Length: 320
Image 1 (tube, rainbow, N blue to C red):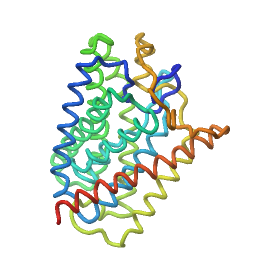
Image 2: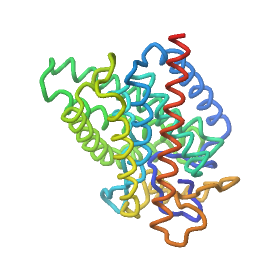
Image 3: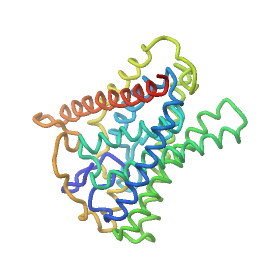
Image 4: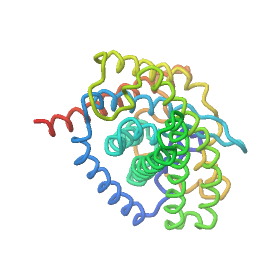
């Protein structure tokens, strides 16, 4: 979330406006646009019959799971990011598009992450996290030589690495912006996200174990998925069920907010220029828990629809 009056944040590494200077933000935008552009061009060929609904379901699950903070050491929270899970199930290009969809809707609809620095958030969580996870995952699988537990080990290590490298990228951006010296931001961000990455790895491994047990065919990137689309509806129902747990999320600040508080640059954060569903609380509802759940349901359905639409358009453009 954006840091307004230092509320509890729900997203690790979602940078608010004010943390990065204009030229670092511009460079991040250029890199993000280039990365997403490549993903758009390459994703059409990679999207099979199963990936179109899976991209929508996975985006919905990632959005919902990101609302559930878990407590780590020192009164700091973290939570699932999802880059590793996205690339393991979808491949790198569709994975980038899935994560980008989530990050963009979080910024535009929920004021989670700044608008001027959206390029940095897409770069860190949509591109760096996914490409790092994909490379690490493939490397671990090759190293383990096809062992049965390679899926879970690869998923855990890839997820941990994706969070850690995304945090390092964020620290570098803060350092070059002059927001915090790199000698301070880098060890602080890398240290706290090394712990957050353990939670990311456990959740990713658990999700992969569930998929392997319930629908192992979804782990194959190519080929049609058996059973029609009932599995997609079931997956969407699981994502919506996860939203019901959102009011139980840890109230502690996330990794980036904790570093900003501890090192004195939290006040650099700027307010969003508008509000739609700020702080994941649906406006006009007095009960905060209910307002959070409704906001999560709305966001989950919107993210699922947009991601499904992006996947369908890309597949149609390639097959037509």
